[in-house]
Amino acid sequence: MDFTVIDAALVGKLLLLLLIGMGPKIALVPFLEKTHTFDTATKARIGRQMVLIAVVTALILFATGALLMRLLHITGGAVAVAGGIILALIAIKMASGPTEKPHDDIAAPVDPDKLAIFPLAVPYMLNPVGITVIIIASGEVVSIASAILVIGLILIVGAFDYLVFTNIDALAKRMKPVTMIVSEVVFGILLTAVAVQLIVAGLGNLGIITPTAAH
Image (cartoon, rainbow, N blue to C red; front, side, top):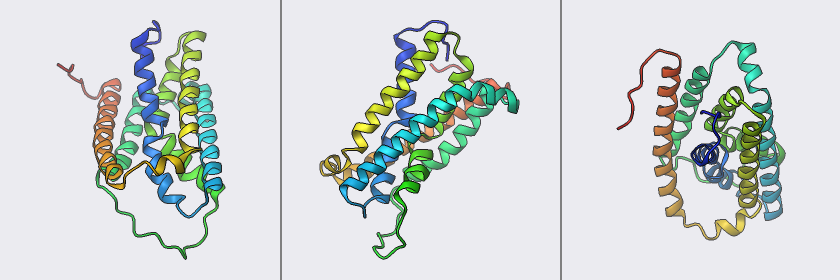
């Protein structure tokens, strides 16, 4: 990402990456599966906590990402490869379709506060794409304006997540199971492609390969 010039193309690209990296889509199905036994108020509380934790974690990563890379002697390329590998694991699971066993109503109770933190906030809401983009952006921002842009977009995406997950029951009633399954598989395939692109870009950044320009 080139932050030397802030224009519509940069804003649009960053917003799209953040919607993939910490938007509601990847977290939606796991949220519904893992909170199905809770009442509406508890689901909304889990949603609020999940979004708050994801946004705060994203802001901390942005504030410290460049420093962490220097301290650990890692580059943006290495971060991209690592993020791509983890994203590929999540995306392949999504693309494989539903594999969950039928819900067991006598299973041990789940602590909603712990559930909101893991796995819902991280790695489903703030997923490997978001972590990778935010850490790389932390190391590449060149001005206060570019830093404000990244922070502002994180907060905008977080506000969108908040609206979705605090009204999840109302939205779930409008979602057809078949449509959700199909969209999950399609999005999983697209995310696998994003994961491959992250790995290729990271390897190119490390000088291991020379990516060819898209035609």
